[in-house]
Length: 196
Ligand SMILES: [Zn+2]
Image 1 (cartoon, rainbow, N blue to C red):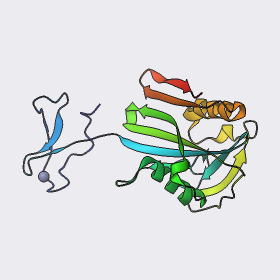
Image 2 (image 1 turned 90 degrees about the vertical axis):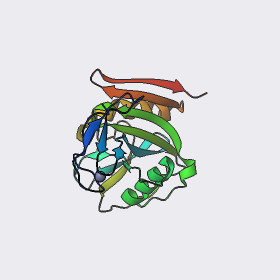
Image 3 (image 1 turned 120 degrees about the vertical axis):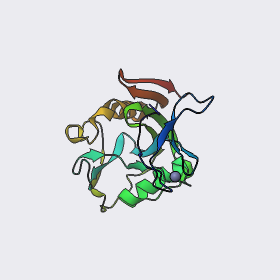
Image 4 (image 1 turned 60 degrees about the horizontal axis):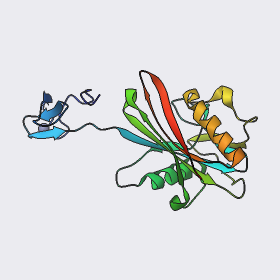
């Protein structure tokens, strides 16, 4: 996977990159002969925030492409210099104007999506009330939905339905878990560890 070329040219000098086998390294790396720099390619990390109040989850309707008009959860890429939990809280703020303390976010799911070299980290946050969100440039609409009210048929990422169903089961039963999984050519495999 890590020998996939995502850049052809050196971002510092513009010279064509070549693949170089570094002694002791399992994978060939992109290397700039001019700068004598190895350009490592690593997975990007996405974070999501699942806010819940009793048996309802906060869903958002995407206001931007891809999947504009489809429903999802506040999520986005982690910036450099930012912790995972701060990234999740920032995305929540940007998409819904809801401000939460990043330290209150609880890890719930880690999924490695190998075909696109991404890692998805999902946090949950229990809420005492159904917090008021706002529509934003990134969010057309929002809503707190129970399992039967949820917009399943217009999900931006129907492949995450299994996880979202699992989250509903957790909040309905108040029996939470930490889940770790990977998506690869064999499909999505995951394992859940129930929290006592
Ligand atoms: Zn260079």
